[in-house]
Image (tube, rainbow, N blue to C red; front, side):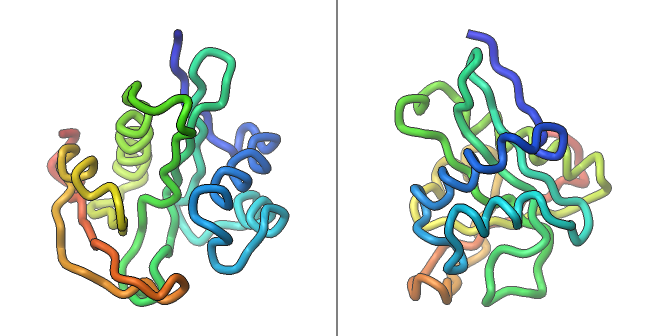
Length: 158
């Protein structure tokens, strides 16, 4: 199977699929449903922001974004690797890692020196890709602790 990663800004028809995945994976992020998330994905940006979709052959097989903000308790940090999701049937093929690397490359090309993310389940995946645990944070919307991680991009690709 061939893999390619496309920007939603170039393929806006992919936004509803991304929004559906995000609701399935993370509940209603920010209390938003599929229609609101679709509009947010397609809406104006606050800097270098983009959502990407990975294709495995002809099938959409995952998503990840570069977002200006993602964790309400840390508005001082930006930008963020956000919304990394690969449907179950496509897992175990390296798609999440490919998406993370793609977002890192996009951010680096946009002049970003440091990326941030938070996770409650995938810290080992990100650590294996060079991300460093900074500490624990409180994720307000879901009212639980998450792992805050940082990736320094200034030194070039990992």
